[in-house]
Image 1 (spheres, rainbow, N blue to C red):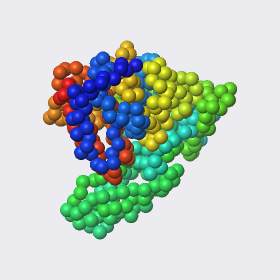
Image 2: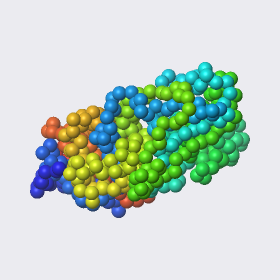
Image 3: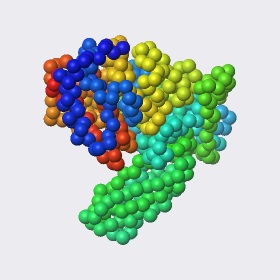
Amino acid sequence: MLAAPATAQSAGGQRQVEAAIAQAPAGTRFGIVAVDEAGREIVAINPDQRFMPASNTKIVTTAAAYASLTGLDAPDLDGGAAVRRVGEDILLIGRGDARLSSAPDCVANCLSQLADAIAKKVSRVRHVIGDDTRFPDERWSAGMSWNNIPTRYGTAISALTLDDNEARIEVVPGAAGKPPVLTSIGYYTIVNDAVTGRAGGTTKIEFSRLPLDRTLRISGVIAADAKPQLLALGIDDPAHYAAWRLMALLRERGVKVGDVRTRHRPYVTLTDDPASPLALAPEPQAGEAIARLAPPPLAEDLRTINKVSQNLHAELLLRRLGLKDGSGSVAYGVAQIEKMFAAAGIARTTWDFSDGSGMSSYNRIAPRGMIALLRWIDAQPWGAAWRATLPVGGVDGTLARRFKGTPLEGKVFAKTGSLNQTNALAGYLIAKSGRTLTFAAFANDVPGDRSATPQMDAALLAVAVAN
């Protein structure tokens, strides 16, 4: 719990912070709180208003994982993808791991390892079935903008995840006036409406696709002398994509394969009858077990989630949390988050979350609520390990370019956040005095395509220098 707020906030930088944020685009709404090691407030601006946190949501999701899950530093045996033979079919079964790869240079947690194991046992397969029934079929969380779905930022969520559920297309300039050359693995049907422009000209390549449609339209222009452009596209049915890739690997190994199918589990809400078979994760599949992977420790992925702000991995982690007491749904994952906030003594009115990554526009938290959570985390036995997952100002992750060459270089440890009209940063900083301060800073309603990040950073520098 937070200690009682200090009364003389301006002495610690309140006026300087107010001056810094006054330079933000007109109409921006700020919520900023900073406290000292005893929990006394140094700065408080709209501390109890609720703000959209964007990727600050990942603070909550990863902390809930440390609070709820065990064995984070051991190989993720519970999450490893597996293959089983059921009659003439091969089931590729996902268990929520985010890191399964089909890259040619893959050396661990590789789809090719499963293909090798299958090829040693069978020469003919009727169907390769992508099975993601460990989680209910809830591919996108409530409140995510539909226009993000075709992109890597909004790719679908599935217990069977491969290559970050992204397909990549390389766009190479052709002759001026001609279409560029496209290179892909062939998962999408591509309509190429793009054109190669003159050397030295503009390059702007765009793509569009309707949800659940595998027809992709490429448009725009690429200069004749431009470097190849790489497009990262979201996958709408990750289980199908993973089975499709496994089919290709099996055929490369001489196995005859019929076609690809999928197996999903219908979604059930948290309020439905808990006795329903849909309310719990399914039992292990029937048939002959052929192989199962052992991914790296989940703690490594928590570091990835916070350092680079990986949306898909955060969403999968929320669903892994949802397996603790239920179906693996978003609702059951949020139930674990609610338990964490209750353990930290934080009022339920302080927050609302609808996803694990921050892509949902429904998420809300008050700055004082975030401060209380951060201080509670810091007091936990796993607090130091969690803090090590955060980006470091001017050093790495999403803060690698921020605070460089300032008094906060290497001295701010925080999670970033960015969404439409939203900027956020929360974590810990080492002030001029050497004291560690806890802070939460949110900017909502930023007009147009502008950013309030420069003013936010200036405000935090003012806090650090004044303390």
